[in-house]
Length: 242
Image (tube, rainbow, N blue to C red; front, side):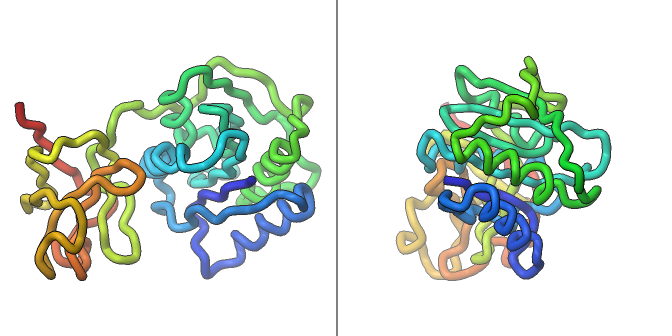
């Protein structure tokens, strides 16, 4: 299985071009579109989202992860084996949180460059062929070298900011393991805890722990982003009470 995680969006041709490469190089592999609306140009937010999603996929699968504002520059390219799952993408911090949160992680630098490579589309030309080879079970050792650490490593702890806003207007944070009695405030608004949407009043804001274990801010049958003016990057204040 190859799992796609990008900021490419779905109305442009980029996802289709990547899938064409995967179909050529790994035609028997199932391709899953996990997310193509990761926050644009924001590998820090993407790193925390990717780490939260990873455990929902079986060991042995290969993630092709691309949020790559430095494409075409000397930034590195990496392969990570973490928690029995493979991750292929830019070495810009995007793979660093999942790498650090797992034990027995192994790292490689991608040294291979295809003969034809676009300076602006490494997702298609560089990362897709590597991910396809790994997914086929043909580890491309001749195209990689082992490394001890990634070039860019984000803090492995929680990210107390909004890291994603879904199409409902729910605001996901990078915060985990929050007790129900915690005080949660964002953009000057205090949110109360609720277990689920139907357990709070219509139009009422609340916070809950979502299906991938992250603190999420929502409005029942409404948009938290619109009601409270929330955006990716907004600080999330979580005060855990004794």
